[in-house]
Image 1 (cartoon, one colour):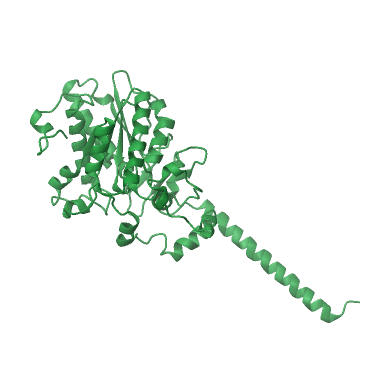
Image 2: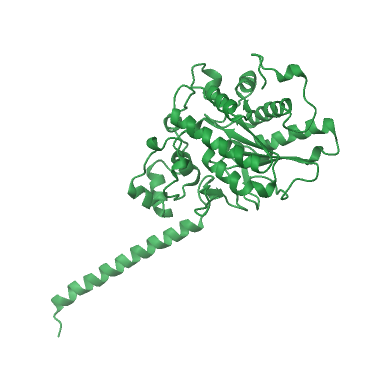
Length: 376
């Protein structure tokens, strides 16, 4: 017969085991619940693609409304755009715009984003030549938040052939030259794992996550607790922190980064040529350049890359400076307002027409000259 003294520890052990099972079950239920809920911010728009070199992409059919009320809808082809046919109509002309959250249209309506407004500008110019084909000028928005030229080059090589572009434009943002883990993770919060060396502008300067943090990112619950510990999901990014994370690299430094960028653009150019398309780069300024003449300037190095590689470089800085003061052009350090997107589209359309890279009559010669006498 078991004594009462022996039964008490057994009962306690059973209760402890039951409590442990209940805690584990509760944690698993919370984890499952978080996996079923939409991701905070715009992260729910993304899906991990470990089977593709571009690492992640927009989730086909995803849609949500941002905290500011902006509606985001991803088409069945995986882009924030309307559905496109596999190839342009006979006699039509098709442009693909690669880029990050700028081309994607962060906090602006789809029709206000740079690619959509560029399509409007180019159709207007084509209509002056031949009203019958004006509607066949297309600009496809392939912007994905957090992308850098590594993702863009991989996406172009992997998917563009099915869309038969005539021209490919890469949108440059000054944070393209920074550690990609800073914006890949901020945009997706996905467990991307070890990134390819080619994804880093300077592999020697990359930020290495602690092992515990890499493991944590695989759990929705752990990610939620980590986000709360760091200020919560909805807390705006501190601008000083953003500046430290995305320090602008001007033309006077960052030799490794510039060499890497040139290599990625040459990959894009080669992919475009293999499809019979031209390639060019559109350089967006950042807000400091409108108010501080001493702000690091990447534009000279980008123009040098273009001259060496044989692709046009469309610099939007002067257009933004000319329009500064009339209305806000930036939402934050990097992202343009709808007005900023409109100015970028107008200047890009002009430059493309001046270089005879798109349909439509060329503008007056005077409009195709910059103040220093060079072409835009």
